[in-house]
Length: 166
Image 1 (cartoon, rainbow, N blue to C red):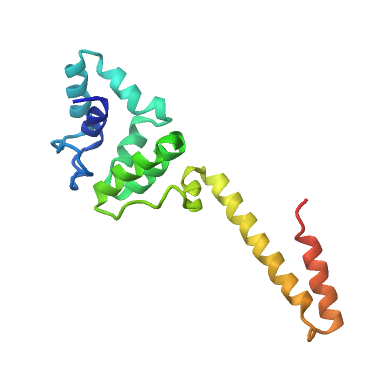
Image 2 (tube, helix red, strand yellow; image 1 turned 120 degrees about the horizontal axis):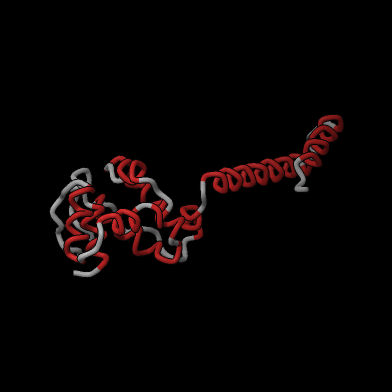
């Protein structure tokens, strides 16, 4: 049993009782506190050290960790871990896909994977930027049309100028 197996022990509380991911050992389900005690006893360290490794080191409170361990929040937990450990995105995606019985995550060459590593405010900024680009391109298509009256073309041109990046 290695440290990853210990994390599985802590992560597999009763709410996460799905089938194990590829090749993972089946870990009996228990609540977070019992899992922390078991791992601490095995490694002969203080349970607070385990709790710290599962919370503060990844930017969580114990209350938030308990929330994320709920089966309904597994996607949020996955995204949180990917944001904190983007270099391990494949392993994290595989683990959570195995829990949910989902198909394998997208290819490493898929550009949309970067979205998972974004924090909510960065994701909102990206979405806004993409929408503005789409609006600019649409206005450009209308400006190139020959069947649009001149007064309307001037208004479209004014809107297009207002949407230019700063």
